[in-house]
Length: 277
Image 1 (cartoon, rainbow, N blue to C red):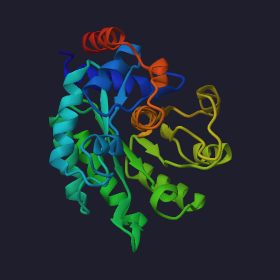
Image 2: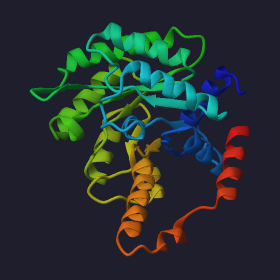
Image 3: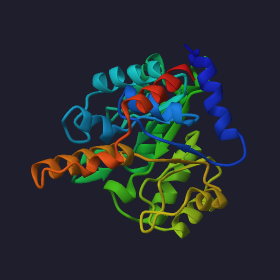
Image 4: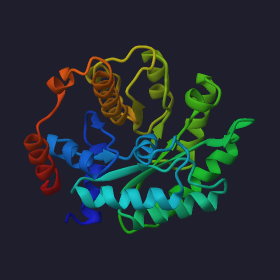
């Protein structure tokens, strides 16, 4: 098994090297090994994808469930794993710091802290409060014996106010608080992404991007995006294929869905490659 410290330095190197990398999101050990076997260099957990695999909606996972899940993913492949740690599973800075420490104990080399409160009446923490939470997470990460990259997320375009100036102000505050990577999921246009890139000096993670019209990875790299994650899209694609296959069985009763199915041998070979590195 690859030592956690080696994974951590490999993950940091991906952020330090020129160019962009794609960070796909597995939802179980099998999908993690398949993605590793296909040649990706690092992985990120998906909160929504994992939640779906347990039969519940996003934000219905406890910290204990998340930690057990990431232990499984970390053990599945030799690749570095960063995780969606939601809002740190608590409102206080201390809760965020503890979640980072527990995530590191579980094998992670990175994790995100978002500014979504879970309260519909107040979807996002105030900027100063959110920055304090990021600062505590970063201090906990920096106290570890290996590099652990904290990604600070501004959730305006997902759950708060789709306000680009406020998003940028938040990302700048999180940068000032020491965040290693910045992330504003759901940016609408390439101009939005360009504006964020021009306003910060940390590596920027983009979710697919942009939301109003997805573009090839090369276009995002040309803008200066450091990494692109998939969120729950790969899990949703797999579950979508299941739904379409089941509907075909229940409807005409045909087997056209088999044309898109991978063979058991191909999947086994990829998982074996992914487990070995």
